[in-house]
Image (cartoon, rainbow, N blue to C red; front, side, top):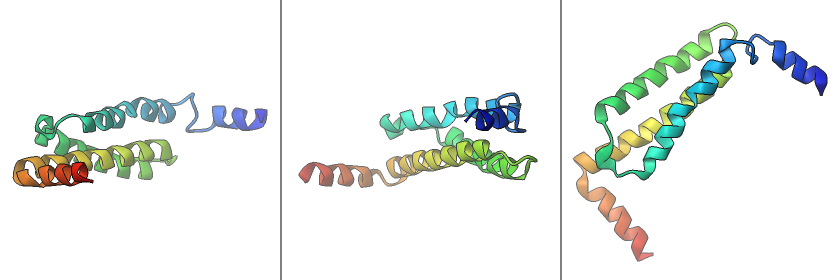
Length: 111
């Protein structure tokens, strides 16, 4: 067990490097976006959500291409991309197809 911890501590993506702490702190973005899924879709900013989708898409590629590969950062941005796309779909449903969410809610309540 000690050798596993020591190898992780001294690895190129271990806690001594920015390759560990950058993604660790980046997890705040998808966590906040996930918390925002409980808010009404009228509060979603279309521009900011679209920018976050592009941002995470670009950084997913960066995390995969950088040497050493940063799978921790890749997982963080994949999660963020997924949550932001979900938020964008909520925005689209609420603003461009206003009856869709009400139908879903009515069907859920009827069951």
